[in-house]
Image (cartoon, rainbow, N blue to C red; front, side, top):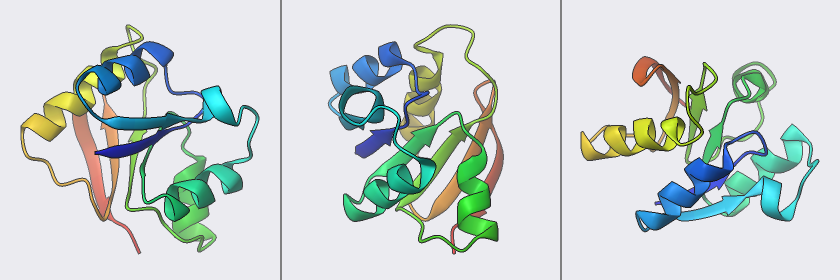
Length: 118
C-alpha cells in the first residue's frame, strides 16, 4: 500500500511499515513543517493513504470541504510504544479491513469509527 506519514507519525512505525513492503513517504523526512493543507494535498496528488495522529484532517475534509485522499487513518491516542501504530495498522490490513474511501479512527488498536469519505 502507498502511505503518507504525517510529521507526527512515529519514525519506528514508518520503518516497520517499510519493512513489511509498504511504500511510505514521510513528511518528517522530506517536508518537515508542512501545513496540514499541504500534507492533505500531497496525499491526494500522490494517491496515498494519510497516516496521522492529528485530528485536524477530519475537520479539513468533513467541515471545510477539502478534497480527500484515498483514505485517512487517524490514530486517536498516543502510542504506548513508537511502533505500536504500525502494528495496529498491520493488524487491520491482515484482517481485511477496507481502508480505501474511509476515514478510520483507531484508539488502542481498535477501530472506534469508520466513516466514508466524501
